[in-house]
Every structure is written in C-alpha cells, then in structure tokens.
Amino acid sequence: MSWGFERGRIYNRRSDIHARFGGQQQGGIITPAKHNVIFIITGAEGLINGYADRQRADGVFEYFGEGQLGDMVMKRGNASIANHSRDGASLLLFRKTQYGLRFEDEYVCEGHHNERAPDQAGEMRDAIVFELRPVSSIVEVVESQPSADLDLAELRRRAFNAANPEPGKTQSISTVFERSRDVRDYVVARAKGHCEGCSQPAPFFRANGLPYLEPHHIRRLSDGGPDDPRFVIGLCPNCHRRVHSGADGTEYNTQLLFTMKAIEVS
Ligand SMILES: [Zn+2]
Ligand SMILES: [Zn+2]
Image 1 (cartoon, rainbow, N blue to C red):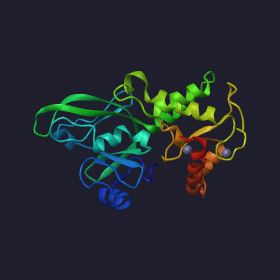
Image 2: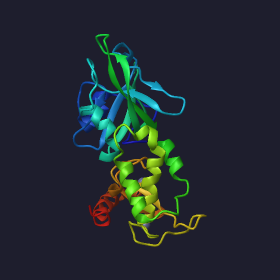
Image 3: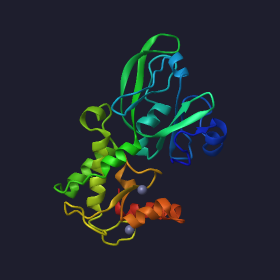
Image 4: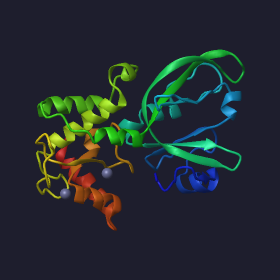
C-alpha cells in the first residue's frame, strides 16, 4: 500500500488521482504541486509514440521520459523523476489497461541513460530512459548490518552524497542499494545509540555490537531507498511502529519533522 493505492488494483485517473492530488491532466508523468508524490504511467500506446518501457531481468524497470518530438530534455516531469529522492517524493508506477490504471508498485529512480529511439514523428532522437527499482526490494537489503568501522564525518559525507549523486555517475559508481545503505549507516551512527524520536536507548544490540535502530523516511510513506539525511530519522522499533501503525502516527510524524530540524542544522 502506497498513498492508499494497492498493488494490482485498478484505479481511475480522474477520480483516484486528479480529484485527490491534482496534477497535470495530460501526459504520462503527473507531478502534483501540493503532494510529495509523482505518478508515472506506462502502457501499450507508448510503443506507438516511440517509447518502449521494459522490465529488466535484474528487477529494474526502464521507463522512457516525456517529450514527443526531438531530443528529450531533463526538465519538468523528467527532472522530477531524476530528483525525486532528493526532493522526498514517492514515485508510483501505474500501467494503462482497458479497465483503467493498474497500480504496479512504488519505485526509486536508480539512475538514467540516454538511448537513440524514434520520436512520435518517427525521427531518431535522444530519449531519456530512467532506471527504476521497486522500493520494497531496497528495504530488504537495508536490513543488513550497518558498517561499524567508519567515523561519523565520513558516514555523513557519504550520506549527503547519496542524496545528491552526481548526474550521470549514479549507475556505474554507486547503486541505489549502496546509496540507501550510506544514508541508513549515517542515520544510525548519528543517533549514537538513542532513538531520535523518544531519546530512549536502543532496545538491544545487533550481532556486531551496534545499537539497533531503524531508519524512517519522514517525507515518504514508504521507507527504503536513498533520501536526504535531513529527512531520515533513527527510531527505536516502538516509535517506528507508532508512526506507521499508531492512531496518532501522522501527528507523530509531523513532530519528528520538527525534531529533525534540531538534529540536522544545515
Ligand atoms: Zn523511540
Ligand atoms: Zn518508517
């Protein structure tokens, strides 16, 4: 479940997306101004328009950016996808079907590349192809043990680099898994053994001796993936469950946002 959307269920663009979130009524990339969420749509008609979104064997979904004629440019919807981690926006993929839009999954943009492909007029042009990975597959990796052998300043440097990777270098130098881990490792080290929500000591230690705390993404509804470390907080399991499952979860999350302003003074 992401933003109230269930995987595999069919939704109506007008009543389920625009009525609730606003956003552009046309095109395959919807970026509502008032919500930290981006809706992207894939479908068979993309093939006619020179787009060929495809699933890769390694779990990455390759999504063609927007721009019907000429070279695609890194602006508007395309820039929103490229920067969604830094901006804290969730990326939700829907597939066009004859019944409506089927919610596929929430993704993290791992990187992008350019590819020669025909535009709507059949002319060859540079297309931007985004490499998207399901956020659920990244959460599992992040549950591995944090590294214990780096100092806080180095972890901080890595975490902020992870949130703002240099354009064009993301896929070769650092994968989304590594970037996600860099953010997690720094947040856990920053907490110095105490929950950043309730200030209580971590409830137990990991096998490698590090205190057990969980990274929570304050701006997104799903954890996992790289994010700006100013919006990721280290929580004890109690506080973490409270945010996601508690009756006052939304209010508690807002409170954590204010707490973070004191933790990461930028
Ligand atoms: Zn706590
Ligand atoms: Zn969380």
